[in-house]
Length: 347
Image 1: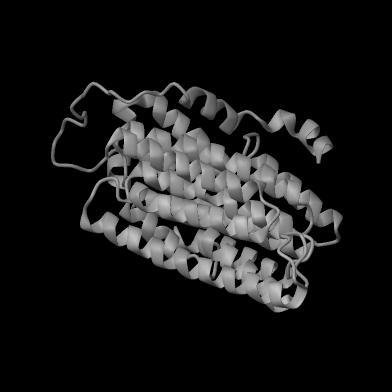
Image 2: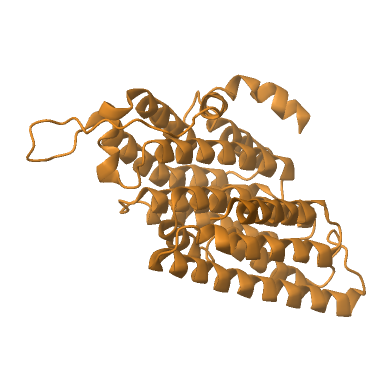
């Protein structure tokens, strides 16, 4: 892609997200979401092939439907209340429609079907943007809507997301699809805690983005997209293999790694609000995710690829990819747990 065009696209993507995040008016927030959607399409089609074209088409159709539903909700709200404020939406029909539209944009269940398909159809870098940056704008709107949203709908979607995010990833061999289902599961955790403590949703989002960025950067650096190629990591880049193992365990929420912090604080918050069954169900369903993370660790660290060739080494190419930000991300992905008391005081 032309560097000038790419810089223009990325600037518009950044501007769209920032406009939505800083808006208190529904119309400007909606415009920011549209800018975001339209600039994401050429990013998804950066390498033109039938699969990326199909992925971009699926993304466009789903997001356009969600945008249309959101605009309809805003129009109904305007008819009944006469104002565009995000923090006040008095009509329950409009509120529920807006919530479902934003859930579709986030990719939480039962509106999640586009996420694995689109992520699998594109390269690692666009997939990384799709599963990290594209979550910021819809979640910032949900953060502002937290006081009046339909909690039953949020809990249902959250629990379904955790279940489907774990269940869907069990039988996958493609790493991008596995990370997409992992994203659906994490969205479930963020949604459930939203009515109780929106700050914890932001903390979970920040840690989830750090972990996902780390994993995508390791995979991009080692040119790995499937489980079969994951088995060759141990002899090419042993240090990367250890980093991947630690980051996957952190993504699963295992102590004493960073990923345990948001889950710990969320379960504490839910039990503090006399909700015992829900955090127990969430923790049990998250074990499904832990299972497929352990599969990835097994494939990358504990086994070798079955082949007729006795020589298990692969050809060593000089890697031209830069990893300057990777050490910082790995440290943040694995060593933030001691900061939990300070973070819990800031809530």
